[in-house]
Image (cartoon, rainbow, N blue to C red):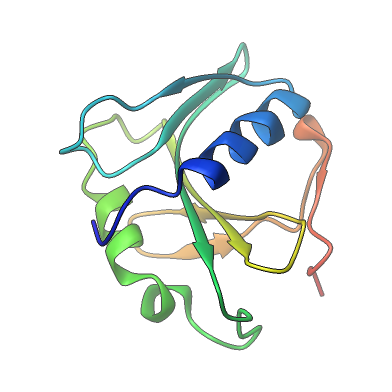
Length: 123
C-alpha cells in the first residue's frame, strides 16, 4: 500500500455505504489491503477506497490505472462469493465510481437497483 490511508475519503465511503443500506466494519489488519467490509442481508463485499487527483480516463484500463489496489483485492483470503470492490473518487467530484474486481476482469457498475446506485459517468 502506498502512502497513508485516505481517512477523510474512507469516512465519506462509510456514509455512502450506509445510504445504500449497508452496515460496515473497518479493516483493522494493516496487512490486508482493503478498507471496509460492508454487508446487508443479501450482500457482503470488501471495499478498497481510493481518491485520485486526476480525471479518470473513460477509455483506460483500470488494471493499468490502479494496479496495486486491484492486485491487493484479488489477493484477499475471502471466499469467491464475497465480492471485491474498488470505490473511486476524483478530487473535485462528489460522486463515487464502484468497480467490481473479479479474478480476470474489472467492471464498472453502471446501475445497481438493489443498492439504489446509479453511476453518473455511465455511458
